[in-house]
Image (cartoon, rainbow, N blue to C red; front, side, top):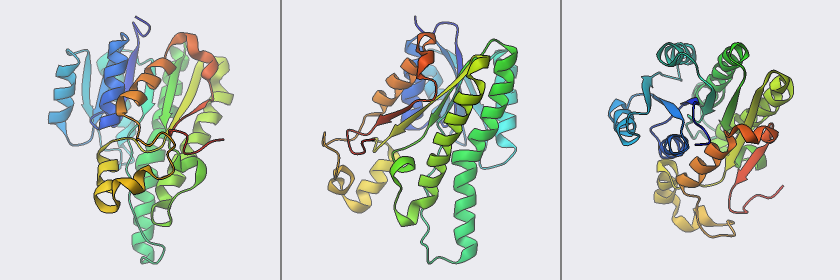
Length: 250
């Protein structure tokens, strides 16, 4: 199996995309560290569905100490981590006309969960990978980080754009150490976040501008992530893989 012997930490693993990534990784022979925030039941159910091929670890990534606690526990449980998927993310809305305190609070939390937690985990992963013959980081970015985003959700788009830059910086700076990085940039994926948007705005609004006229399935993202972790795919280093149905073309 193409990922046999790999142990990969997946943040935000209990969401639809996180679950699909874990399933695809295990299908290809890896073991996974399932990170969750509060939903222990969902994490344990996922582990059971994966025939116990992994571990469940809680951590609050909105807390600045959360990433260090998560990484330390992952290494303690596994002995060695070979890959990291920075998948955890939130999407909040705040109007430009909102009070400054509310505006700053939303931006600070969005950047902490979506970007700064990934920054800290990437730092810890790089240090760990240096000692163990290398490793790979996959950052879950977004179409929103490439083309800009709606005014009331600019924090989300900005955090995802920052993830893309982080990916490229790691790729350029650490590949000579056997440490590579790839970003995935989905458009709409049929997840809880998408369903909430559809409930408010309608499915036609979500599908507008997508030439294939459908959202991506989480399983598509999982399959791409597993492919990107293959040792044979080191030349993907620094790539930003668009998964948006042709709704944004570079």
